Image 1 (cartoon, rainbow, N blue to C red):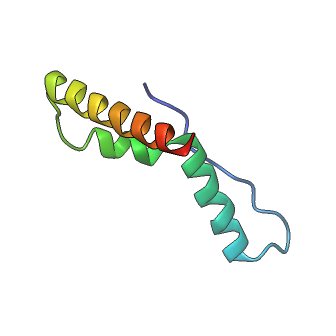
Image 2 (cartoon, rainbow, N blue to C red; image 1 turned 30 degrees about the horizontal axis):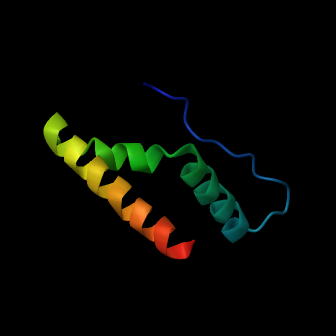
Image 3 (spheres, rainbow, N blue to C red; image 1 turned 180 degrees about the vertical axis):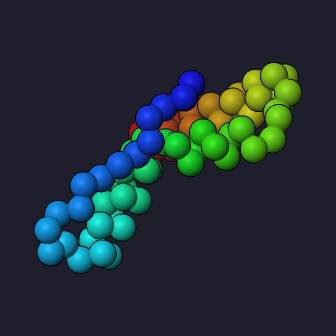
Length: 67
């Protein structure tokens, strides 16, 4: 599951805040932090299934009320 690191090229005379904003956006798009947070602690498979079921129910309720 190893992925190459996120990198951006700094353009000439580009302000550092704009570079940081582009870097943060690239990290968010690559989902590296989300995967890191998921692996910070172990979740039993049964617990993971329970969480997924709850998430599916929440989404189903949300979509049924919007329609």
